[in-house]
Amino acid sequence: MPLIRAVTCTERIGSISYQLLVFRINWPFFSLLSTSNRIKISPLCTHKNYRVFVNSSRRKIMVATPVKTKTTGQYYTTRIDLALDIRKAMVEILSQTLAASLDLKTQVKQAHWNVKGLNFYQLHSLFDEMATELEDYGDMVAERITALGGTALGTARIAAANSILPEYPANIVDGSEHIVALAERYALYAAHLRSAIDTTGNQGDADTADLYTEISRDIDKRLWFLEAHLIKSEDVIE
Image (tube, rainbow, N blue to C red; front, side, top):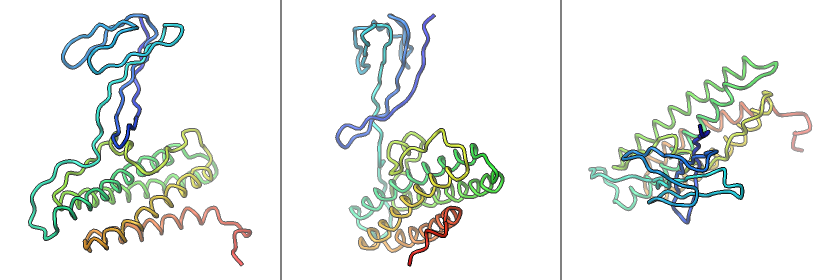
């Protein structure tokens, strides 16, 4: 029997992100079950929007199905006294924040599950608290999107495709390594929030700016908690 392994990856072409479902098959011929019917694919053919690649040995095949990943969804009427173009601009920024919030939450969970070392229990508990907070922030941002008449897009795939954060290192173990990785990502997230405060405030949406200010204040505090584990005497600024 052929060995089949399915993975997903993201490909960006221009301004559009595509989510790719990739099958790697160690067999010269295989059958692929689609949602509508069973499609027979040989190593050198294509079918509709499937793309087939064969390496030099003609033993491994990769089939990629592109699906457009949305960054903002549809809009609805609302009695909020903000012009549609302003609401759309706010939803665009908030959607970036939602993606980053959900992505950061899962990265903190990754640290929570896998941290090891002398400070295991302390960090395990701390990371769990941080992940819970990020869950709340994501919910606050998503509800602001819908309050403005937008659509909150918060699936794991959309978040990963549109997050401003780098991928979390999968093989780190020691607590200090996790702290450094999280501090770097919290700093990026904090910078995004601070920029969003100015952008939303300048657009005249004081409520969204206030939401960003609230989250920013808490994120700075968590970044302080993380960095406090790393500060040494030589880090003093004269």
